Image (cartoon, rainbow, N blue to C red; front, side):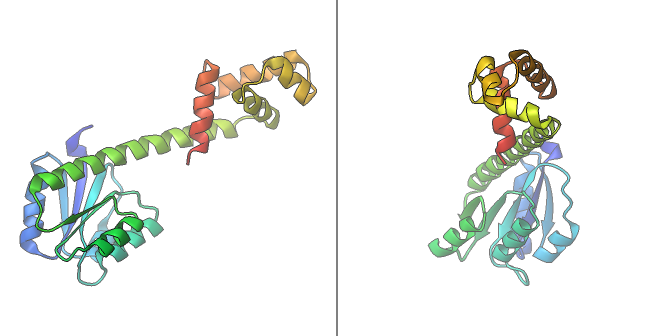
Length: 204
């Protein structure tokens, strides 16, 4: 992963904190974009790759929690680390339930935040790759005919060709043809890979 292609978005209404967080992030060679309110972030955010959002809980206008809820409503998958000088257990729980990845109370050690940022970026990358695999597998399954889907389901369930033929009331040769088509369309060479592709398609 190229850190320079990763953007850390920072929203805090305290100029000195914003500057400190930006300088901290850049020690990891990540790009940083800073905002002193949630509206400016919402108006300018463009999903251009990996990153995360470091978000202050208390903001003028739209609060940190309200912004998190808006991001979830827009299906924006940017991981959120919430920071607050007024944090308490109930606020942290509420934030986590709203989908916040981590919660950090001020004052905090710079390294603690950097560790959370690295974790968030890694999670973002993993989620994106998982989503890509899911979509690819789903597209491949959608290219199958109805009969091929039936054969695939039975193969994935561990059934033998002769049992599939009996179940679907077709010849073993026909099962073999459908099975070969399934393996080709799903771009797999083994039953194990087919099972994996089936799980990826259903995992989303």
